[in-house]
Picture 1 (cartoon, rainbow, N blue to C red):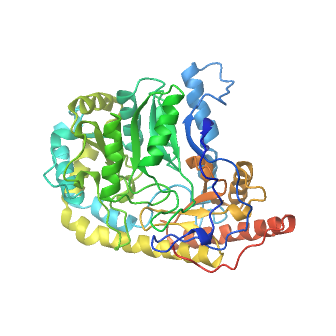
Picture 2 (cartoon, rainbow, N blue to C red; picture 1 turned 90 degrees about the vertical axis):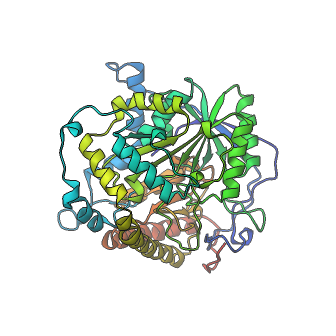
Picture 3 (cartoon, one colour; picture 1 turned 90 degrees about the horizontal axis):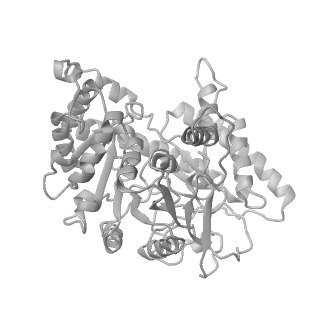
Amino acid sequence: MFSLPQRESTASTTPSDSTSARDMDSGHGDVLQGECLRKPDRKQPRLYGVGDPMAMFSSDSSCLSSRGRVIKWFWDSAEEGYRTYHMDEYDEDKNPSGIINLGTSENKLCFDLLSRRLTQSDMLHVEPSLLQYPDWRGHLFLREEVARFLSLYCKSPAPLKPENVVVLNGCASLFSALATVLCEAGEALLIPTPYYGAITQHVYLYGNVRLAYVYLDSKVTGLNTRPFQLTVEKLEMALQGVNSEGVKVKGLILINPQNPLGDIYSPEELQEFLGFATRHQLHVIMDEVYMLSVFEESLGYHSVLSLERLPDPQRTHVMWATSKDFGMSGLRFGILYTENQHVATAVASLCRYHGLSGLVQYQMAQLLRDHDWITQVYLPENHTRLKAAHTYVSEELKALGIPFVSRGAGFFIWVDLRKYLRQGTFEEEVLLWRRFLDNKVLLSFGKAFECKEPGWFRIVFSDKENRLCLGMQRVRQVLEGQSQVVEDASPCHTQDPSTQPI
């Protein structure tokens, strides 16, 4: 998705060099390798920015309202790759030369497991109440099962309560609803970058709420640091800068595990971020949609709901969905857990427009109550398949001498293709993205995630072996051609592609 222009600000700090293997220390599970030698960037790093979706808006749709024109413009400008993919989708038999999608974060590895479970007899049930208007928060039987499910898999210190659960059709609707009920038009939510770029649309199109960016970079500054690491200090500086521009910040969005980095925040980090929000009376929106997609056994994931005490429970709002962890992005099932009953009621009111059918609610209750199947069958096999696919793509990238960041969670690898850009600009980044698309493989480019370093791309690996292998073959073809173009035009030479774990 194309990102939006924003006002950018700088502050005087140490100049940031481009990331090199020398900068990276061992112990974090990331890989950076084979990087192009560059002169240090002497520009002052940008610490924050405020999204301004109207800055480059233009439309000739005179039949639409001003809001309608903005909505159409988002579709026209932001969905080019996705639309192109759906017009020429790869099919092994019907369209073998079609586009392979390694850009959309979906888990396509476990349809066999899901189809068997979703077609069992306990899923097929109809009664009058399922065909009638429900409580807009969701049927009580479903909210009870959601509370039990979250209590178990989030490892909450006390049982979670069904009255704190609201059910609606996916996290996109939930972001939109929360932004609308928490913020006035024109206010902002703080978010670290890079981040899942569609959140820009989610919070703006209905609520006219903007995002205030906390810019992170790939430079590693010490033994206990990692690329694109979020700290309270960076949050404080960004908040101060945004406030100085007269923009009111009402909340903080955190994605854990993070998309596109795969970062997992430790309990200590979570407490620090929550403490920051409490000091500034900010709401915290915790997106934990990948919480069950941590496939590296050595990693310890901690939900915010597992913490013994939340600094401000009334301003902490947790979202989860089946779209990622259960590979059901087309089903559109999302949940909000909040102790703030004013927020829960306001969001539930919007569920008139974002609700789920009674039949789907029944099926989701049946699925979420089957803890034996989830724990003993689905999750172990899903993690095994995710890890195998991740290993394959990682080894392909290593063979190409391409640096990347990946920490064993989610469906994606954050790939550093800066050495394939001659001048290191976002214009070149988009051109490289188009070369991939012309070669029938869709990736996501870094600017779509508001990454401030041109040349980073997200590759999604959670796909079947035949598509994944062919997709990576097409990626390799583009990069080999681009490498020759850059070599012919630049004195820059790549280092020996020896892998260095960070």
